[in-house]
Amino acid sequence: MAKSNQSGGLVNTQGSMSYLILISIVAAIGGLLFGFDTAVISGANAYLKTEFSLSSIMEGWMVSSVLVGCTIGAGIAGTLSDSFGRKKTMLLTAVLFTAGGLGQALAPSLEFLIIFRIICGMGIGMASMLSPMYIAEVSPPHLRGRLVSLQQLAIVTGILVAYMSNSIIAHTGLADANKWRWMLGAEVAPAAIYFILLFFVPESPRWLTKFGDMEKARSIIARIAGSEVANKEIDEIQKSLKQEKGKFSELFKPGIRLALIIGVSLAVLQQFVGINTVIYYAPIIFKKTGFGAASALGATVWVGAINFIFTLVAIWLIDKIGRKALLLYGAVGMGISLFMIGLLFDLKAFGGPWILIFILLYIACFAASFGPVVWVMISEIYPNKVRGRAASVATMSNWVSNFVVTLLFPVMLDALGEPISFWIFFVWCIVSFIFVARLVPETKGKSLEEIEKSWDVVSFEEQ
Ligand code: BGC
Figure (tube, rainbow, N blue to C red):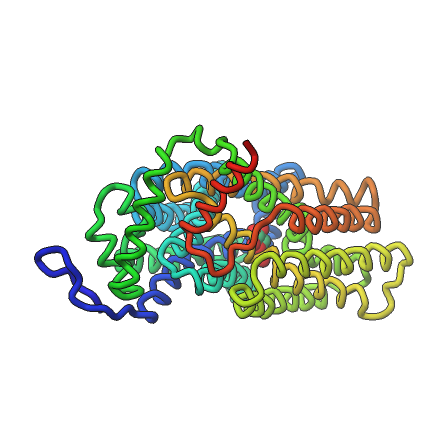
């Protein structure tokens, strides 16, 4: 472990891998709350519908209001975290989760419930960009992909925990009118724990360097990776910071503009391949293929489990075979699965387990590729000074696209039927494959500063 001596030098040369893993896990709890909060409504929905006699429009608004909060949260997190630091902004996120959970549990009316869902959503939106960015900024290049993917593992764990906690609460003897309150309030405990644990993580050394606190930054990197690495990294970070002023307009300079286009496009494609049609509507899809209500819920648990297992596969592979290969294989696998799901619906081949098998294959391919890799790339492809703001723009695009797909999917099913709806997502997989093959660079093993320099080369070539 390294400590600064009085002259500001470092007296210890060893880093600590377990410290790095611990602070990454704490940051990733933001992802757990993200996953929990987006999935919990699937169980609370039915009770809320009865309690407030919701029309289908109000039901849609009640479910998707959280996504409005996510978009706002993702939009402000960049400026806040560039100005006040990653750590303080993560603390604010934990406060929003805690207040949002408590507020929903105690809401005296539908209006209050929706206001607190939006507040929770702001927490989700902020966490969705902050946790990966913070982890990317403290990680060494050769482990960055794996550690940032912990965020996606936390998201899918949160989704599973929400399904499980909903089912436990549904089976208790509580009055129905109280069940949704417990379901929506269950996040208060992990959110409060997140708040407390955040006091033990250090500020991001890259953010500290930007504000001239080099010695603190140096001692944090030394504690993580050893003092030799710290001296080298601080030099690199300082050099990179001299290149930019940190203004919003810099996002549109030639090299960075390409990075912005790539981040935003990946964020949009992650949603346009249709993942949340399955995550949010799985029981409805399964019922259409002839499953009974109970077995449809059982099949949904399979979706959660496969999502979790294949995220582990991504964590294993992302720093070995790289981001780009995972995205390409993922697009092919998802494309084949979606084409087959559409075909099976078209042929009304509901007899065997085939639709379930291809839905699980689709989830496996997403979980091992676009799920984690997109968040990893958004956190690492932008220059130090504008990283927060650029990641905000990309993350907002992800939430807006999520909102559009989630809202349109039931309408698409009604207007176009299942085969065409799934084939539309299949076409987006083809678009994704071509986009990744032609434009997305490989960032495996490079330091954030090396990635930053590679955009300069692109901008030079573009002029
Ligand atoms: C996506 C979410 C999705 C989740 C499913 C995340 O990477 O951003 O929209 O619900 O993966 O595992």
